Every structure is written in C-alpha cells, then in structure tokens.
Amino acid sequence: QVQLVESGGGLVQPGGSLRLSCAASGFILSTAPWAWYRQAPGKERELVAQISRSGSRNYADSVKDRFTISRDNAKNTLYLQMANLKPEDTATYYCKIMGSAYWGQGTQVTVSS
Image (tube, rainbow, N blue to C red; front, side, top):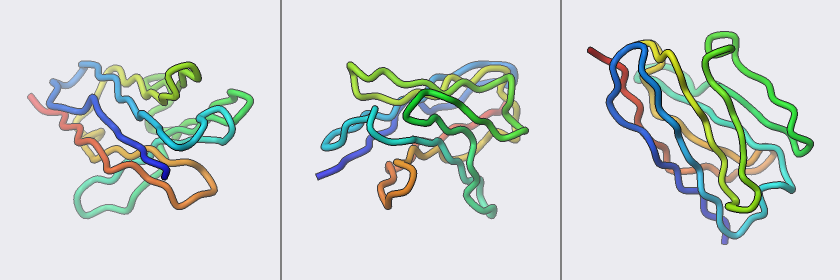
C-alpha cells in the first residue's frame, strides 16, 4: 500500500524559510516523477514544483528562485525547501506521484507577521 506523509509545515514570518518533507512508503521514490502542489483557501490546487526520474526540476514562476525541490533516494523522501516566504505562499502543500492518484494528506504553511 502506497502512503505519502508530509511534514514540516507551520507558521513563519514573511522572509522566513521552511523545509517540507514527504516520506513515501510502498513505493520507490526514484522510479517516478514527483511534484509538490499547493492549495490556498478558495483557490484551485496548483503545481509548485516537479522533479523527474532523472532529477530535472521545474518550478512555477511564482516560486522560482525561492523554492527548491529535491529527493533523498536512500530515505525515500521528497523535500521542498522554501525560502523568502511571502504571505501569498500560504496554503496547504501536497506531494504527489506524477501520473498516479497518490497524494499525501497535506501540510499547512502559513506566512504571516
């Protein structure tokens, strides 16, 4: 059974940093492309960052140069390092195995002073 468990969210001031983690079980991380999505209240879920099996990365324009997606194959864990956070980054963040129906449960990120 595939399980994705996100962690690392919280309340942070504008300009601060957080690192989100997505621990995978029942699935080998390196065998698929992965992504981070986010959904703010009243808005549609949007793609934030993705990493291919080969390790190439793509980012939404709104987070480019501030967020970094990475993975640790030994730990079977996906990460999203977020820097210079802005209030508009406030959302629930989800990890996903691309091309599948598997999502994590989400972790809340709130950026506020």
